[in-house]
Amino acid sequence: MRIARASMGLILMLGCLYLHADEGEPQKITVVGTLHRAMAIGAETTGWIVQVESETVVDGKPISSIEVSDSHKPKELEGFDNQRVKIAGRVIYRHGVESGMQPYIEIKTIKAAPAPNQDKP
Image (spheres, rainbow, N blue to C red):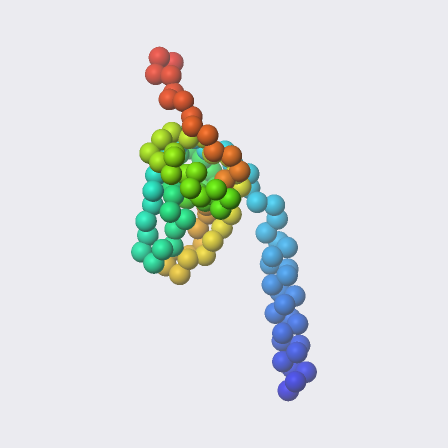
């Protein structure tokens, strides 16, 4: 019985290592849009979301908004609330009980983006 448990533990550990290694390099992304506060039932959110202005594709799916997180300087996002921003970072996934796997951007750089020129077609 002891050998069977040890074997199952080893198989599960190797399976987890294989799945983790299969993820590959996170997708790098740059988006321009308006940063807003976000809320969700059960706190399954980073607290911030950016409404993107142009079609952006994450894992082959077009998105109109994506959550953002800045774990290094979380208070910095408050200065950009309801403003047009340009965010560069990488796409990371988190698992929520209600929402399942959800992508979000781990911010590398964030800066205010000027309003688009309305005179150009």
